[in-house]
Image (cartoon, rainbow, N blue to C red):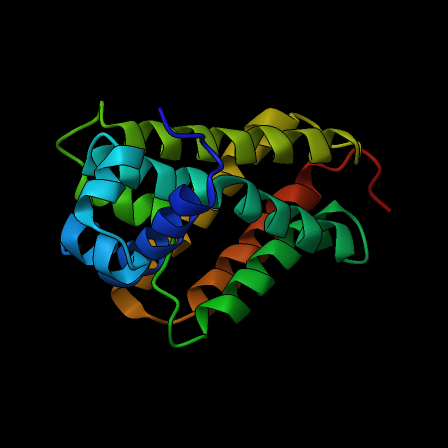
Amino acid sequence: MPEAASPTRKRIVDAATKLFYAEGIGRVSVDAVAEKAGLTKRTLYYHFKSKDDLIAAYLDGRDQPNLRQMASWFDAAEGGADRKVEAIFSNLARVARHPKWKGCGFLRTAAELASMPGHPAVKVGSRHKSNFEAWLAGELSGHDIEEPQALAREIVLLIDGCFSIMLIHRNPDYIEAAGRAAATLVGARCRNKD
């Protein structure tokens, strides 16, 4: 079996990431990924048993970078937990204004695989969303917030809701509105209100 972090495997995942994010998983063939990676299809299949495994690897490769990005926006924001949570949304709105932004790759992939709940990529997406929720609950716990787990779940609902509506309207103002709502929720749960 090929080494998980081999340069060839990384090249394949990088090519798949660009294509899958830009065009969607259903519209991109294994041939297209192999061509973009500058490899043969045989080489691609040496590293991945199937397109399904490649799709899962694409999302798995986005997991930690996305979580680190959200954490950096939270950490860099000044103010209390309400401002820090709102900063996540403000930064998402800024990113969404880029013409190549296509929304949340995890949600878009899950939508394409809605009839296949056991698909490996759906499991990766579920793990990613759970990891973000757990991270956020931990951060909120450190800011003296009541019911941080429930609040983290509510914020995840706002984030994923604004991602969904963005696919329809393509208007980042929805993300900013969701950020204001999230800040209000956080402010209402602060134990030490000034």
